Amino acid sequence: MTIRTERVGNAIRKEVASMLTRGEIKDPRLGGFVNIQEVRVSPDLSYAKVYYTVFGESDQAGVADAWQRASGFLRNVIAKRLKLRHAPELRFELDHVADYSKRIDELLNGLEIPPADDSDETH
Image 1 (tube, rainbow, N blue to C red):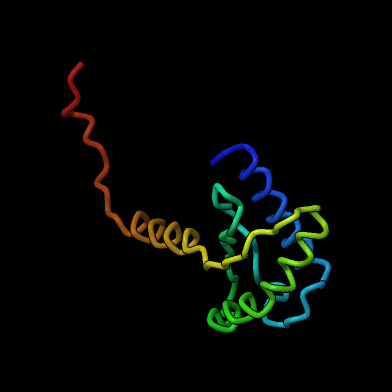
Image 2 (image 1 turned 90 degrees about the vertical axis):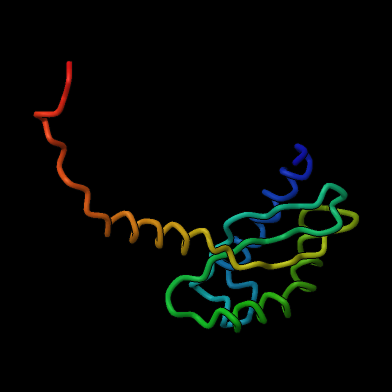
């Protein structure tokens, strides 16, 4: 990732997140329980993958549909606010990192590790 793509990705992440918190995206499926984790921009700036998480028992398919429907609006607003001649096409993907880390925690907590036997230690 180049400095420019990283900078554009961070700017897009901040802008989409602030639009969510300010309620500029009118779809109720995106209200309150969605968080923007990361944005990865292609080297030629033609597209950007926006990784998001959904908290609680929200309808993940509905959230994905809401992002798809809002993508054109978001692209237009981002182009204007970030003063980009060509804003990248936005592709939204559910970020599963939180689910993976929760599962790893559950597995680690379920392990039964016997206490260390001090008599076997050699000095």
